[in-house]
Length: 119
Image 1 (cartoon, rainbow, N blue to C red):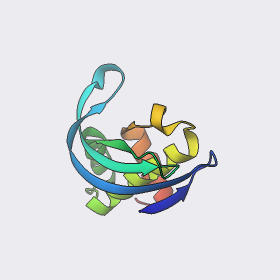
Image 2: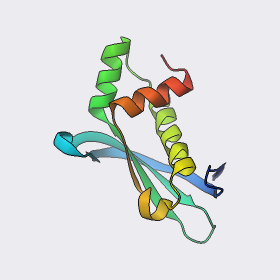
Image 3: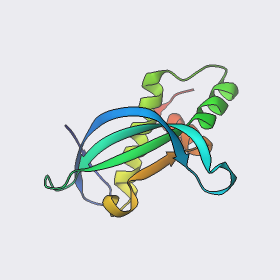
C-alpha cells in the first residue's frame, strides 16, 4: 500500500492490482479502441476501497513509438499510468463518482511522458 496526498487535500492509499487487455473508453470516433487496462485499488478514508482503471490506449502507444523512434518499455508505460493516477488525485474532487475510468490517449501520453523526462 502506497500513499499520495492529492491536490484536493485528500490522502489516498493505493496499490497496483494488475493489468489486462481492454477497450478504452473514448469519446467520438475512436470509441472502441484497444487498450491496456491498469487497475489500482484506492481508498481515501481507509474504510471504502474502490477500483480505479486507467486505460492506456494502444494507438497512443504506437503513435508515440513512431514519433520517437523506439518502443516504450513496460516500466515507462507503468510510469505514465501512475502519473495519470496522481493527476486524477490532484484534480478530481470525487474520485469515486468521477475518477474510476481514466483514459490515456495520444496527447495525454505525450504530456505525461514529457513530465517524466521520457524522450
